[in-house]
Structure formats: C-alpha cells, structure tokens
Length: 402
Image (cartoon, one colour):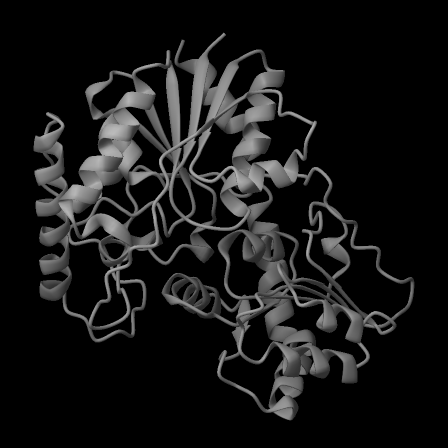
C-alpha cells in the first residue's frame, strides 16, 4: 500500500478538484492511503455536501489571495501569469513556502502528485518523495527557457519572455533562501518532477512541438457525483451542449440565437442569474448551475460550445464532436488557436454581439462537413493511442514505484 498525496494549489472552477477526487477514489479502491490537499475546499464540499465525506483524507492547503500585479499587457506566458497572481513579491512566495513546508512536515509520503501547484512543488524540493506532475498543457509547461508564448500571434519577443523568466527566478530564489531551500536556475524548474502526465492529446497542446519526456494520457474520466443527466429529448433536432460563464458579455444574445434556431440546448452556466434560467424554462434550452455529467450523453451532441477550457474541449474531440470556442482569456485563446489549426473547432470572438452573426456561426459549426470529418478522424486516431484508461495508467505507475 502506497501513501499518496494529491495537491491542487492554483487555478479555479471544478476541473482540478473533480479529476483529483476521481483519482483519489480510484487509488483508494486499489488499496492505497490517499491524502488530498486543496487550496479551496468549497468545490469538494459541493461534491460531498454535509454529512457526506470522501473516502480519503482532505486537508486545507495554502490559498492565494487575489493580490494581482497589473502588467503593462496581458500575460503572454505561464511565467507572466504567475508573476501577476503573487509571484511578483518574494514575501508572498516565502509565506506560501513556509505554509507548505509546515503542512508537508506532518505527512508520510511515497508519491506526491501536483496539479498546478508551483509553490507546493518548490516546498517539496527537500524531500526524496517521488514527484509526479498531472495536468493540462497550460499548467504543465515544457522544459524550455524562456517558458513559451500562449498566443503565437502575440508580438512578444523571446528577449522579453526571458526578462520575465529572470524576474520570476529572482523572486523565487529570494524566497527559497529565506526558507533554506536550494535555488533554481530556470523558470521551468517550478514544475520539476520525476514524471509528467499530460491530460491531453497533441492536437490540443499548444506546446506539443516542445515536449520531450512528458506522457500524453488523454482524458481522465471523472463521472460527476451528483452530476445532472443531459436528458436529451428524443427528437431529430440538433443538440448543443455548452459550458459558458456569466461573465461572457454577450451570453444573452448567444442563448437567443440558439433559441431562434430551434436547437436543443443544455447549458451549464455557474452562478447564472435566476431571471435567465426562468426566461428559458419552457423552451428548447435548459440552463443549470450544477454541472452536467458529460461522461455519458455527450456523444449525442452535434456541437459543444465553451470558452476553450481544456477539459470540456477534450471531451468534445474524443467524442468526435466539433466545438465552437469563445475564449475569454489567454490560456483559452492558446487552446483555441491549436484546436483551430488542427481543424477541430471554430472560433467566435467574445466581443461579437450581433445575434444574426452569432446564429450564422453556430449553423456553420454544426454543419461544416470538414469540421465534422476532422473531429471524427481525430477521435479514431486517439482511440488506440492510449493503451489503458488514464486512471489506470497513473495508478499502475504509482504501484510500479514500490
């Protein structure tokens, strides 16, 4: 029996928690002792509302306050994202390292898996534990200096990226000296590990051409506890699944376009206002604020709509379903560009407000035979690519360490 620790530190929404919860449950079923450390317990409490408890130990990890540094331009690399959210000041990083060191000192560990947890990985440098990266391409950068651009069209030079990398390294090393840990030379060392599993496929990895020893393992299937069924009506009308955010500035126009097309729509919109839900209650559109379980029923879709979130898009592609992407930030933009390059998705600018233009884009995305053929071919290519489900691949690797 291995003592396994799973760590999630940075990022938002359900994706990190749901996949680590599924992996933790699977490792428990295989007889391992599992501790999960989450920076935000609210999501796990949504999955296991009181009095239900997960079958593994859960600890509160250090969380990052919203103390963002305003950059002169949008972040162009993971380095610049980290600088903007707290790694710009050594006192903040020192505080996080001290918190992680205190937490780790109380644990017995054989293997530790990090999901977007840079400060935790730095704090674990003093331990001989077997360290594993688990994540999507954005949070798991390639071994390259400087860390690469998200947006290949951005007018940011390698020299500018190197300046950002060096600033990050300087801040981190000052904090590492404060807590008496070995310093780093390159920004990519923040995610150094013995093994890296990428929950992706090359067709959705903007950095695929820079990868070396990372292993693609595809989709970590995570049936949602308490997830809603898609419950499609048994009619020949087109079906669209969407995961959209209420901050999307033209959400109302988009939903109205779907409604006017007579399409069956199933939309997960966290924190959607009640009046929006009520507006479509008696229509062909269903809006929910709890996640759907897209491990089943998604294959009946004709189109998936999202903001370029990697997990939702991966579900779409591996089911052979075209996607319409509406990126709201740089990470989503990079994934969108890669998916479009591979012919797997169309792009709708989040600033497009004209309902007729939105409606026309949706129709093309649902009916373009080239888009459909490309996604179906990609799904077929990927089916034999992974010799076993991602969950089994990770568990087998953990067990191989003993």
